[in-house]
Image (cartoon, rainbow, N blue to C red; front, side, top):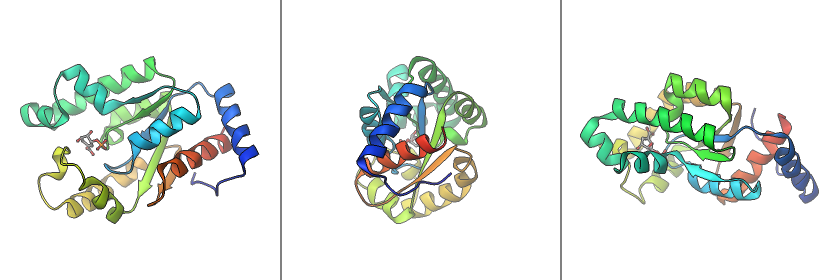
Length: 192
Ligand code: S3P
């Protein structure tokens, strides 16, 4: 389902209280690089008084290597295997909010696991905003191999059929990330 307009303060407080009371599933954020999964995830977790974990950070910690080093030394397939194991573990350990790397939900096994155990939220965003946001850091191996706009456009087209399987979709605009977190709460409340 797609998001509805932001509701008033009382409705929002009621939505938060209901999710806290009734939902035990982790909330897993999926979507392309640069959509703001980590920042939105932190805001969302804090609004819901839950813990937050970034799967890419957990992978780096488990491998004792940067993501770019894992890609360089072992290749993408090896990274995806580790990513699947780490996300499975995080979903067991955390009932809060988990931000995943942009390719995680494209992997059939990882996606099946997330859909089975969590509430998957696709944060969607237009390509120009993604290009602007991702150009601020050079830490993403997949964007180093060519023109970022072309790569992001190709990835968007390839991945959209997978991302759209998430139970919830919200649009990230150029506004504050807390607005996105707010709309995620409303959307979860509406589909409970
Ligand atoms: C990737 C996205 C990255 C990271 C890795 C691969 C992808 O995470 O997992 O570089 O395949 O889109 P972010 O989406 O957090 O940048």
